[in-house]
Length: 381
Image (cartoon, rainbow, N blue to C red; front, side):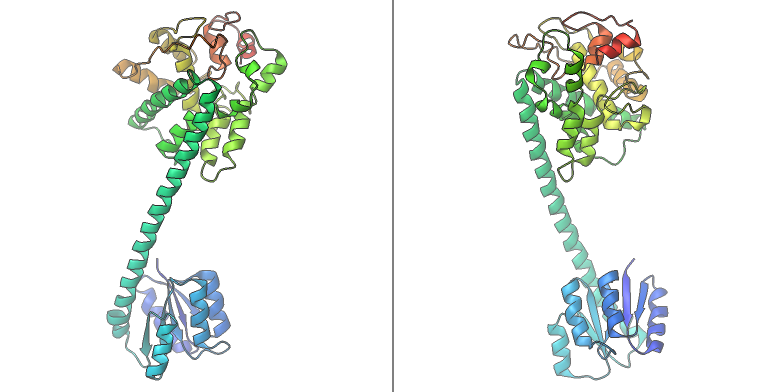
């Protein structure tokens, strides 16, 4: 709705214009002196001002001058009782959009003045929209650059494995997003691009985890697990410092949460966990199960789907599990059994969640069967 300010010390004119503009859908503000007019302009930022040049308290020319300093997009129509060519030239030089001379008819206001100003407002709006589009595209480019930079940093942890893992995770996540939409699942206001970027960077916090812990071939000590479990918070704290990435940071912070509340760092449960993080948990686990490691072969896709079924509603969001199962049944989920390079002979926790390894008995330092108790599974988180 267009916000309009009528500033005139003649209250009869103000009431007449208020009625006229209100009937035409404008939101109308009134001011009867100079200081009130300036306060309205500063606080309310009207789109359009009808300004009497002879206002008590502050001269109309001073109001016009200051209004332009506050917001030069405000359209100001000057009202004057004298047809003075020199004065008209001055008000136009100060930025007035138009002027009307008392007495005037309401028909003249609508047919001449408002038509002209409406066209000007439309052009301003179109220009503002174009500038907004340019700014948004610049922001997207910056965001893509930041994501690419962090992705490169993650890949330096293990350039042959971690980078491939997160790339596959994004591919799986993109398919899951499309499937969830097909299923009518609400995904919130975050764009697919930011959701996928958050999943891509889910392990960014591991750049702070000592490599002797990330690649330790045997079981971790309790203290090492405490350090290991810091990575979601560490990663989120990095992204939270960057404008525009705060929602993405939630995916990073909560991707190790479990649907039943047994995960970390906060023990969130069910839909308390952001949808992006719930997707990340499933794709991270799925890729860990089907991908070859130096110490074991990746399991067949049927086995991975079976594990997801068994832990539906426990470790994993049932809806996300249903989506990935739907993709499998359609034949559109085709994991690549890419081997981990022989140079890394450890458990490579840089991309493999301990919870998944514990559940499916794939841990290098000693297997934990899928039927292990909750306490045993918790030990391998």
